[in-house]
Amino acid sequence: MLKRWILFLGLLASTLAMAVAWLNLRDEAPIPAGAAPGQGTPEQVARGEYLARAGNCMTCHTARGGAAWAGGRGIATPFGTVYAGNLTPDPETGLGRWSAEHFWRALHHGRSFDGRLLYPAFPYPDFSRITREDSDAIYFYLRTVAPVRQANMPHALGFPYGTQAALAVWRALFFRPGGAEPDPARGDAWNRGAYLVRGLGHCAACHGGRNLFGATPESGMSLDGGLIPMRNWYAPALTAPEQAGVADWEIDHIVALLRDGVSPRGSALGPMADVVYRSLQHLREDDLRAIAVFLKSLPQQRGQASSRRPPDPAQIELGARLYETHCVDCHGRQGQGARTAAGAPMAPPLAGNRLVTMDPPVNLIRVMVHGGFLPATRGNPRPFGMAPYGLVLTDSEIAALANFLRSSWGHAAGAVTAQEVGRFRGGAGD
Image (cartoon, rainbow, N blue to C red; front, side, top):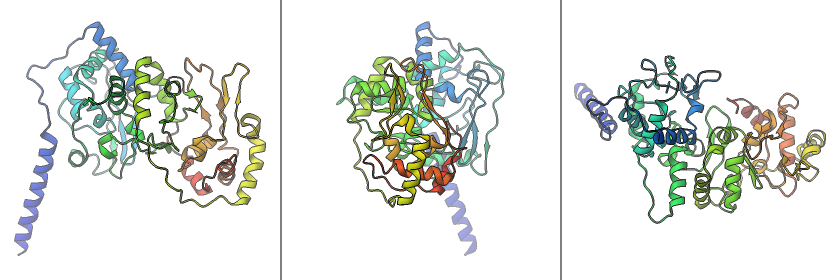
């Protein structure tokens, strides 16, 4: 009987292994024989540079203080640290021996030059929706950047996450190569916006949230929000009016937020400010408007009642005193905010501000602890910033101040605790 069980388990393991292998290989595109590095036309190179900027690719593939595109930046995950690769055309350590087919396979199938499975910290589940034409353009642009000889850093992942076998299982469960699939019932602007948001812009990598296995729901199609792993910022839901939904915004106000980092309806802070600074402000007006059209069309969830208890009156009273001491000069007694004499935003209004009332209150805590800084853009070249109060106020005082803000000027948001402040103080920062 024992031998039969051993044989059964062996057969089951073999079947599962073959199933996983088949799931990972069934959509694999073989590299054509003789595929070699190539050069693009000036038009392709210029297009590729624009697309690489739209995808914010340099941010991850350039280490702080390092050479552009040479990789080496560590991306912290709950499973360990993944290091971005060298995308310069160096033949030994970069993409110098890659063909356009190799590059397409990396974006579309998540495989490296030698066929090795790539980790989804490189967002190929989203990039899989990029067209071959755009993939080739980005490739041809990267062929023109200065080559840098810098060996790729080995990933620092705990067992078994650092094995190809574990990655193969993950891909079998959560990854299917996609493609650009325009909706014929929608207009050109909507389809272009959907392509930029769901593909090249990989917005779901933050705004989609992640499950326990690090996968985004609905194969990267969800934009329902979630905590950004290891960074302790919350990417608010683009499908919720009380978070970051823009269904009731004017198109021009959405464009202003994406391009300038500030608009009459809101501001970009934290990781989003970095996306605006490095990527979105450089997009063409027609692409910004296409993104706005798509975001405005997203179905909005019905607001859910918070399970948080109301703030304690003593906490609100302490928070009111702290507001009078530290905040009122800029944000006003009625939370109305302030502008310069020229009309430029100086301190955002707190009354009616979704960052103040949002549940979870992660971003409110982060801004109070670490400060709030808008991106410098052409439309807002000298942004004002808010000083950090993490070294001035205790966790209990920050919680009290948050509770005052969340209970004033018509707000009725739930209580913030000192324990939450302690939890969300740390993280990888902006």
